[in-house]
Length: 148
Image: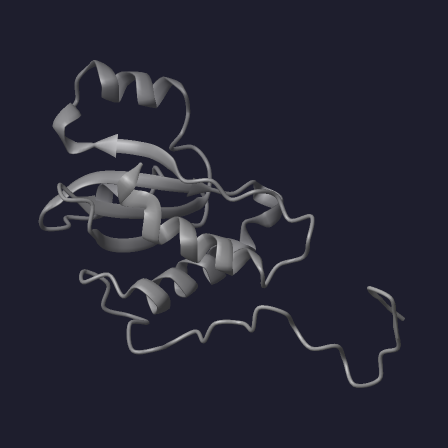
């Protein structure tokens, strides 16, 4: 989806800080406020998309990111408590329980990088980009493409 474009780029950059076999991070459709509490909402409840921990994203009608938050145990406990002015969509980046501690870092990373206007904490910080290729440790020996 177009509204995910800037977030996807930052999620990919965030992955560079993680170990190589960290599970994929995917943005998923969560809720459209146009659904109200109709059939689409009921279907979304049945597929248990709100029953996982992760990072959630509020967007307006035009696709501007308004707010980034986290649900440490489940989305369900958090996303319905917010009243974000102008919000139209809530999208989700779910984590499995094993990797849930990393959602704290992703939330902070996205707030620092994207500075959503409804977030009040963390917007004064910056996370500088990593160089395209990280330098080898000073005491490492390089043999071809491998470190020793």
